Each structure stands twice: as C-alpha cells, then as structure tokens.
Length: 301
Image 1 (spheres, rainbow, N blue to C red):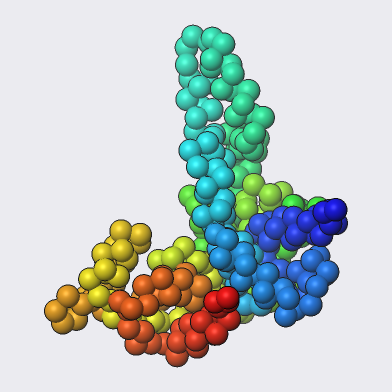
Image 2: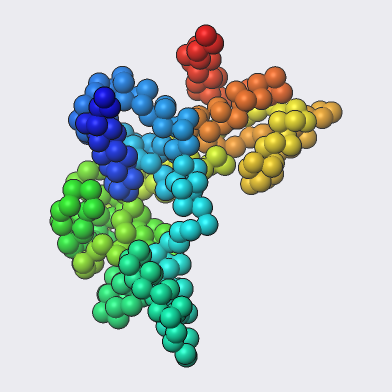
C-alpha cells in the first residue's frame, strides 16, 4: 500500500519551496520529517529531476524557471502581466462574441489580473512604486504595510531597505531588517508603502542582487569557474546555452576556454559529467570537489 502521508509531506515541501520566501534547512526538515543529511539527498534528487534549487544565504527555494515547471506549463501558461495585457486587448475588441467572452472568463478565473482590471489596485501600485523610487534615491528605510505572505497565510508589516525594482516594477528587492536577509517582495501583496523619514540605510554593504547564471540557477553567491572545451563540448555548450558565446575564447586548435560565474555547481557539473572526456576542469577547486563527490556517489551496479 502506498504511504500517502509521505507523499503529502513531499508535496508540502514543494509548495513551501516555491512560495518565493526561501526557507532554512530546519524549516524544510520539519515539513519533510527527516534529518538534515537526508534533506540534502532529497535536494540533490530535485536537482537531477529538473528543479533549479536556489540557495540565498542559508535559505533554499525552487526557481519558477525550473525545467520541470517549464515542461508542465509549456505553451499553455502566461505570467500575470501577460494575462493582464491579453485581457486589455480582449476588452478593447469592439464586437463581443462567445469567443471573446470565453477568453475573458478564463483569464479572470486562472490569473491574478486585478492590477489590470481594478483601477484602485492599479493606482495603489503606481503610488507604491513612486514611493519606493523616492526611498531608494534618498536611501531611506520603508515599511511594507500589510504584506500578505502566501506560505504563512499571514499579513504583517515588513521593515526593509529597498534597493532595486525588478520585473518592470512588479517586485522590489530589499534588505529586511528583522531577518537580516535580502528578499524579493511582490508589490501586488503590499498594502501600502510608508517611508521612515528619519531612518537611513545602515546595511547598504549587505545589499545583494540576485544573479542568474548560464544554467539558470539564481542566488547571491557566485563562483568563478574555468573549463577547457573540445569541439563537441564547445558546440553543445553553444546549442544548449547560447548566452555562453560571450564567455568563450579560442584556446589552441579545436579548443575553447569558458570562464563564467555560477551560482550552483549542479548545472555546470551535470554538463561536465556528461562530456567528461571532452572537458578539462581548470577551476575552481569547489567545482573539482563537487565533481569528485558526484562521481564517488554514482551507482554503477
């Protein structure tokens, strides 16, 4: 008989890791009901199965751009912004018919397009963006009033140092004073932005943007790696990761040197292990250690 409780815990873990908050190993172990050591094995399994596991500081999350999610939603899903744009196009159609009404209803049912259909929410968003711009220019702390967290199902005030708007103003990157962490907050979940006029930034040295590497892993920490690629590895690198063209330089006959920063060794490690005979790993030492450990743990039975 299947252990349904076990699968329920694993699904709860996935839901927690995609809420955009980021969670510590202690929090993840509590949900999964396992030890930290087993949690790391589970995270490795997720990476191998097509999930992009982000680590920012001591917190883990799953990237929405994970191949697993893309495979599920390929060609059928839109971002809320795209859905809102389509909704406005449908609204602009002069002659309504059964098809336009069906599209309108589906967009309203499956996407959060309130910012595009509710004028009050749209005006509130614009006002909050203007206040954040002002706070960032003058380096002031703000309070994100009544921030709604989907994971904890709670509404609370967040005192932060905002330093970057992302995704065309849909999100704001901040340093949160209470958690001492850099976080990305969705402006659609913010009730009101209040500038604390008499409190300036005091942690600017801690402000870090999210970096996404060639292999679509995102995080704050970067590792500089160098590979020497043969003809086959060079061609496959360009085919699978076109942005790598800016990181490749000729290095002798039929060889190229790849130098780039990565957030995780998982993506580049998978590429190297798949073409090990055509790749020389020059650096860094962390990548070499990661590859040695992966080979050691391979099951050749």
